[in-house]
Length: 245
Ligand code: IPE
Ligand code: IPE
Ligand code: MG
Image 1: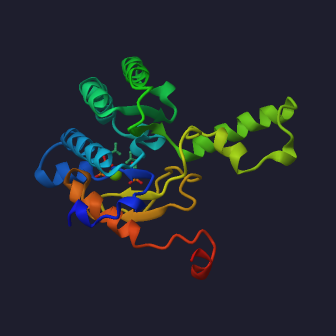
Image 2 (image 1 turned 90 degrees about the horizontal axis):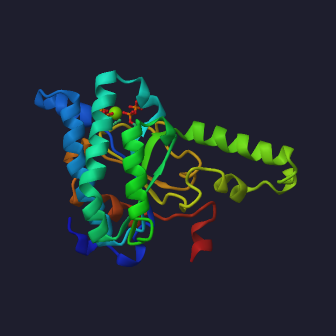
């Protein structure tokens, strides 16, 4: 499968990836789980590069969930260190490729050093628009929705929002993802076929693509295959096929 077969006029605008299977990859090779996470960062770079090449406008990567805080301390610490070093290492690359980095999630819970580095990279890349890369860090969709409900309720209480005007856009503007369009294509690696609390609101009409490759084994070609598959689907959004013609 080559990139050439893809229809450049039908590239998904927003691709989101649940990067899963690092632990299993490491276990299969007889390594500690954290080695799998380290290896996974090389896949991140390849996928980011491929998205820039293809003209994907938004790429959102699920890197750490609210539930992942329950993992062993050692693994969490390793993931945080890895995040910190990747943010440091990739800044030049982001300048070169004009990538704008953002984050969604309860990032206040991240270690101070990570927060500081994240802010630095966000600030340094804020004027770029080639690829809008969003990292979901300490992200949970239910928590995001709960926060939105609280903010909206407070505004209703203070007469800043009329309850009868609450609609999709009211919810959208109170989510972490207020600057992002809805997800077009959601990919999950590693063979698991679940959403694991990722962008529940934002994937309402996303095309779902599950593949068996563990994250480290997920290549550019696999991404092209996912997009090729996406391009063959008919997105009806509730209408009939005939209505779309
Ligand atoms: C995904 O890989 C990365 C994170 C959740 C941080 P996993 O660590 O979940 O790998 P598996 O699913 O145990 O193989
Ligand atoms: C989802 O993967 C979170 C990330 C990829 C960051 P998990 O491995 O945490 O999900 P479950 O526990 O298998 O559902
Ligand atoms: Mg997993």
